[in-house]
Image 1 (cartoon, rainbow, N blue to C red):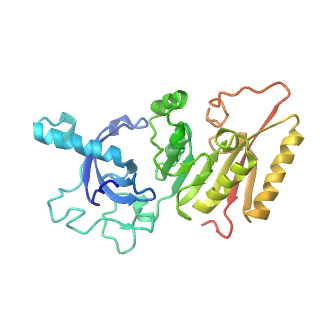
Image 2: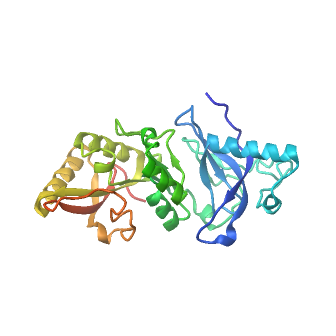
Image 3: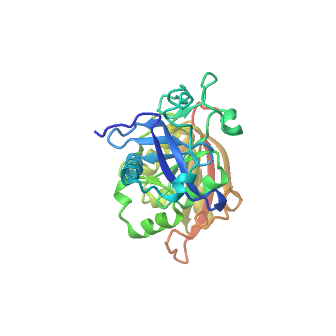
Length: 317
């Protein structure tokens, strides 16, 4: 087991904002929560003073940045940009997050929350609105996760993939290009279709084209994964499908059979079923399947649908 950092630990991290380059620079992040769903590979929920770039770091990332900070202190050669970094109040001051007892509260999963009694200083209107929308995405190259993060900048988007897929060269190039962090240490096991998160851990779970990409068209594995998503999501499961058949009727029959299974075995409510061209992110190259790298024979018909599913016995807020 690895040693854990204390809440209130600071470290510097360079932020690259493609949407607004003037925000690029070094920001001081503070560890405000810890995800211990996998004790050997803890993840840290970290916030910075503006609230624009709050994110989750792996333990390796945090330890790397803290080691670099120690090196700069010893060598007395701190980067020039570090002198202009956006920082919290000094950790030694009485008004700091730790000494001023201003750290946010934690929920049952170790994530930071701003309760009515919390003394954490509000940074923007989103802090005042209440809990953050947490979105879990099964994403093997980060393109969709980055798109969702751009569309919903105040949401916390977490991308996961199975560890046994990390060595695939094509996917690695996509991940490096889009610069979105993907968690491989914990969360998803492709062989069993299980999600290693507790019940209602995320507001929304996004499953893009998992039937072919993650389940290899194995219906048993597909429904295991879908039932796991229904368990983890507190509000909504969004499922993008890419079905193939000789006729559109054959594809629709498969879809109807899946809907019946959802309602009969999982008591899940189908809120919407729409062609993907009308769904959110439909204009994305990822969502149109341009990155799938698969070829269809002339007799195949591909039907793309986006299903919005509410977990059983859970009401949308």
